[in-house]
Length: 80
Image 1: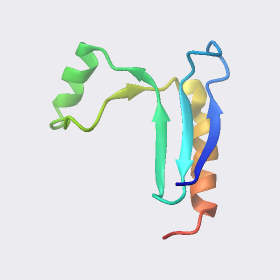
Image 2: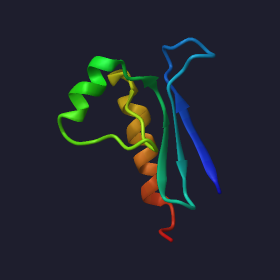
Image 3: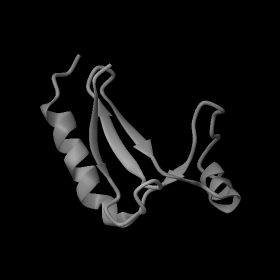
Image 4: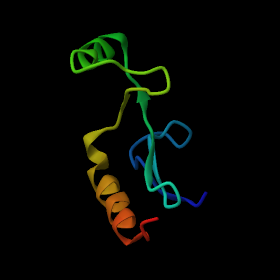
């Protein structure tokens, strides 16, 4: 696995940052975010089930540039 660290939320505390990576081997975005509270999870469940192997997380909108950057990295990555 080649995991490319993209960035952390620039406005969060150093040890508590939402973060984004790109795994070019799996061709996947990897996201660390704040855990969704029960109300948000219930709202998300209106669209369908959340399997035990998945989680709902939040990222602040101020990370839009980080998300754009991870997309650029993904677009440059060789598709396997």
